Image (cartoon, rainbow, N blue to C red; front, side, top):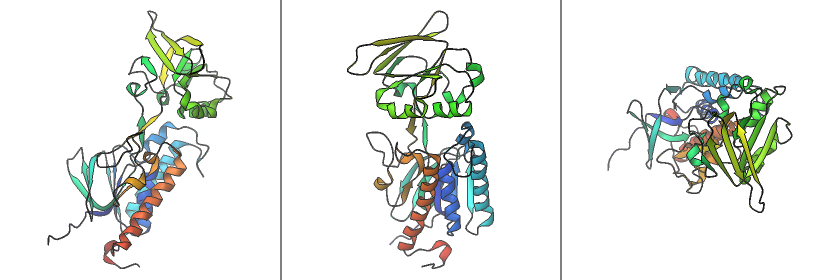
Length: 317
């Protein structure tokens, strides 16, 4: 009978956002060693959220990102189990076996094995090609995240989609005189609730939107009204910004729902735990992601105890 593989670590965590950072901190607190795989820096996407209003103890994304980075550093430096942080590295696939998980790293080409893995790769910006309600347009238009709000003053701006970055922009600059026209698919009407009362925004639910460049450099937008209505709408805009929503950043080796691409925790291999925004389109908030990362690490810990295994060879049952 072949000898079982001895994994490199107790827990491999893929993704250094709120969920992934919470997972390594929780793992360290219960004596599990971990490896964190993150292409950039812990909490890097939080730096584009200037204002937070639903995170306990923090009012800005950059401040929370700094706290995450500090927590990860503390987990590695002050807990006996330790946390190895692999920045600038990206996981491109995983494979789960009966007693371990293998994660392949794209940059170095190495593999890391763990008793369990928490996948917290989150979501990415949707691409123009994925917005079936839009025809025409330029895939290189800038995302709303990157907009210089001051530069939008006095311009007619078309924001494609009503996703949450729109509310973030408006909350961060409540007195800035903006003029934003926001067409969005009728199915996303619930996303517009956050900005519906802001007089700087004109919300336009549509069935389809056709975009075409004009000789003067502006963009003509022609919309078809939702089903049951016959009116049409058109606007010529000085600038177009993308706000098309988010798509799951899935990883080969995970079970992804064929309907929406998200990776629900209850459909994965027993040694594979998904956390954060990757789980579903619902409840994509920083606080819920953070909590799910902690919960995933605890699930791995208790599953390991049921395997009659205890971290670092000591029976803690």
